[in-house]
Amino acid sequence: MQNYDNLIGGKWVAEAEAMPNINPSNTNDILGNYARGDAASVDAAVEAARAALPGWAGATPQLRHDVLEATGATIMARKDELGRLLSREEGKTLAEGIGEVTRAAQLFKFFAGEALRLGGEVLPSVRPGVEVMIEREPVGVVGLITPWNFPIAIPAWKAAPALAYGNCVILKPAELTPGCAWEIANILKESGCPDGVFNLVMGSGRTVGAQMVAHPGIDAISFTGSVATGRQIAVQCAENGKKVQLEMGGKNPMVVLDDADLDVAVGASLNGAFFSTGQRCTASSRLIVTAGIHDAFVEKLSAEVAKLKVGDALDPETQIGPVVDERQLQQNLSYVDLARSEGCEVIGGEAMDGQGFFQRPALFVHATNDMRSSREEIFGPCASVIRVADYDEALAVANDTEFGLSAGICTASLKHASHFRRHIQAGMVMVNLPTAGVDYHVPFGGRKGSSYGAKEQGTYAREFYTQIKTSYIAP
Ligand code: ADP
Image (cartoon, rainbow, N blue to C red; front, side, top):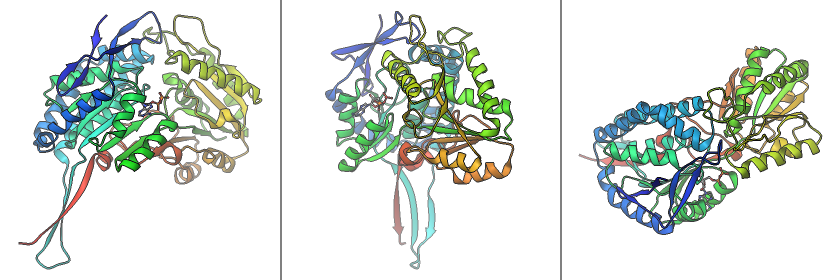
């Protein structure tokens, strides 16, 4: 069994503890033993990152570009192998795994270009003869805390802009999926990233994650994960004066209106609710359907759901891979029971036999928006179908949630699509498209309880990973 160490100050560091990385499609398949750092590992990584910071913050944009471009090129060249690793550790299908790796490569390449494009502004002062310059500088040492559901794309979309804009990084990936993060660390090192600029500290949230949030040598925290953890981190960051950015949950609505193309609506709902096993913060977990199309929609969607092939993520026939682990599977099953007890007709949702954590996708039909199963994020292959009278009620129900990440509408009406785009309380809106599945070169993020702080990705990522300096210059 291979051991995978932490990367601290450019050196691979074995820790006293390690944990097995288990394939959720086949629990007999162990990918390797991954180091489990502690508070002292974070301290060492911070020391290395602070030592490396002046050099990296002052490096030419060409050097930063070259490191990120080479990293992106290597990830792209190895996309099949890394996609397989991703599917083995996280459980999304091989096609989804390769797709996510491709996106990670594209993110590194995009931010390689951004390293060259970062500019400022020069304005005349209101005082005669004086010039004003507005420039962006790195924030410093940034801590990245990532979840298991996009084990290569999320570390990439945080690390690539952080490095492009001259910050040093400490990445703590989720305990369940350290494999892809380890590969990113290794590829960055091989691509010429200087020692200490990128550090990988694998370990638990309670020890490594908490120490990152508490450490005075870390200037900013970018977090993606659960609402409970995110809120706790925000409070601590405020107390310590750290910049913070949070991406948390969703209970994303997909509105289907009477005039929707039924095939488009069913296709978008099937994709949005169930692909990647529903384990996406942008998943369509509330399908809000107007009365005239409701029955035809449920009939067609249930028939499509019944046809979905659930199985081993590496089997080319598989459309829905396993749930990530036993704890998540039990949580999903308890929501299936809850939905039934709340009065829903449940279609599917059963656990399946096998050496992995397999579950049939579930539809909770005849749901209402006040049910707990319609309000709490499940993070599994489960979607509520809520019948509404008309567009106005659909919009009201869609907005009646603590979350606001992504929202979709299927309709042939430009009037309703435009009204929805303007009035939905969400950071991302999809018209005749699934709520999940976003581009890598435009901002990502939500509102209300889903997100906090600056947006991620695209040129907007600079809002978080840089800080502004205004200079006044007299001749
Ligand atoms: P999930 O339910 O997706 O596992 P979490 O919020 O628990 O959501 O985890 C997201 C990331 O946050 C993981 O990398 C996890 O280790 C980390 N984490 C968990 N608890 C803490 C904490 N108290 N402080 C910092 N990071 C944490």
